[in-house]
Image (cartoon, rainbow, N blue to C red; front, side, top):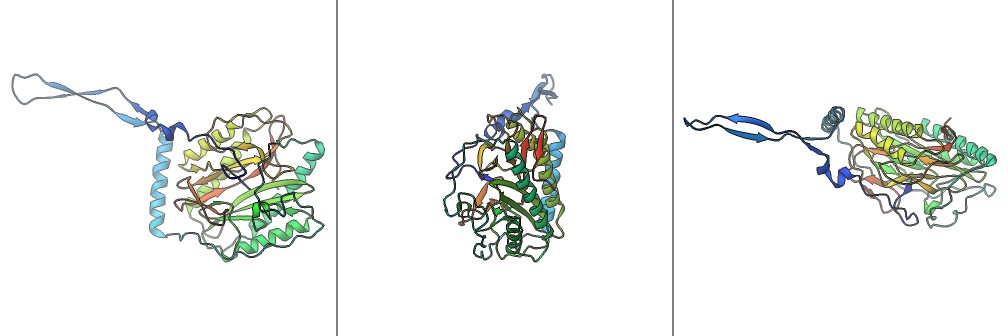
Length: 364
């Protein structure tokens, strides 16, 4: 479950947008003047020279070609079928949790917890518990993905996820977090994240992110994936595939002593190659005995401080879009959509930093 940035309780403000957005003129190159001699019709007069300047954007040929191709594909797909905007359904009440299930301390309050300043660094016992929580979250997510099909409601997915978590002796972490009413987040099509399960049926061609977090023996395991529902068009398939590749590339740079800003650089490089936007508003976070803690893990290019430490756990959870990275939030305070209605995809893993790399704790 992504941390919002900035938001009440999470006071961290991401750095300003990249210099490309702030000062686009810096990213134009002026070539050498091209001189052309223009003959003058009148006899006996000298010819005069005209100087032209060639101005070009500093873009690689591959990036420009991918951007043009994607624009054409988006235009052509809109001609074939216009996807209706996401509409909310009816949200049912919270599902019960047995008294014997250990609950996180925020349960019972509708206030969004403050971002913990405590980095989640574990001893051997803590690592073992994190592995157990991550493994359960991965199994629950895998099961939830098998339910994705046209006509099923996100409410049905929520109920099945809730029951599986409870049966395993764990607590569904989103339930009651800052007043969130459900046990899982289900974000469909243009919903970036934090979608609330309801009575809306999934449609053929939808994409849906399912975000699962479990609280097992006092430790949270957090993971998500975007699934394809029925016959999904090629643009959506590519968006989901590239989002997964961005996560993989980000994980590959993680190890003891590595800089956190490498994560955003690696994600941005790959996403931009395909012309996709990288959402800045929602970030990864430390996770362990608390749901959301330092460090803030930004997915866009940034100059943020901080280095990874062996034994540390945190999430990486990039959101990519087909269009704008700007967002709007419904009045439920959670459901956040792309401002232009374009598709968004997200995927997430909880990682454990080791001396030479990172273990993915939420992988079956």
